[in-house]
Length: 265
Image (tube, rainbow, N blue to C red; front, side, top):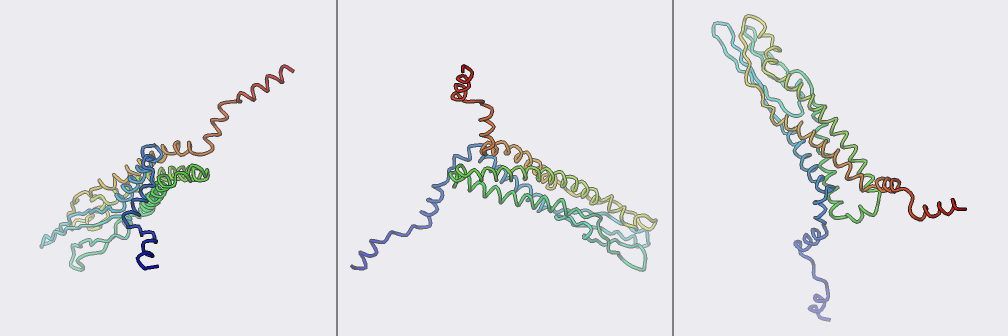
């Protein structure tokens, strides 16, 4: 057999484009029009918004210190802070209005990393879980419908994420309020000892912009409502929903006929 006939007898290798087309051909895109799939897409997007806004936040606060010495020195203090909001590790230089030293290293007050990191971690886990759930819904829907363990696991995870989003959004909202209080320019001047004497006059600088951080809290509560609303649609896929309907319908026609025959006897 010639080499030409051997090459012709072998199946042609699929190009990368054909492989991609075959992969997307097996996806049931109409599932995205149903509440179960559509809400998963929203959960995936708002999880990105939540941990993105919180994890990428950075701001600055500051104050002005004017010494009452002969030189009338004016010092501008700028303090940068951001995620994960370990403010007690953020340092800045406090000017001194005496001849012994020029400045003293100070730290902001408070450590608010716990609620912030929990919030971001939950958002990342939500992102990966919803992405995996979407692949299961769109590509392996038959497996999801036939094996009842998948809907039960999905329902338990959905309820868990609902509870965790409520806790995370509330905790981070409280933590953000404390961050705002600790980073106000007035709090900065109160913490500096040089502002308490008669050797200097202190004035507050610009207030930090907290718009991105406020959005993260808002997206956290939106995620809670999305997961809470999705609990019902996931529950409808579980065997528990079918059992409840069967019990609510009462006895069937055959059982009713048998009961009537017994009463006649």
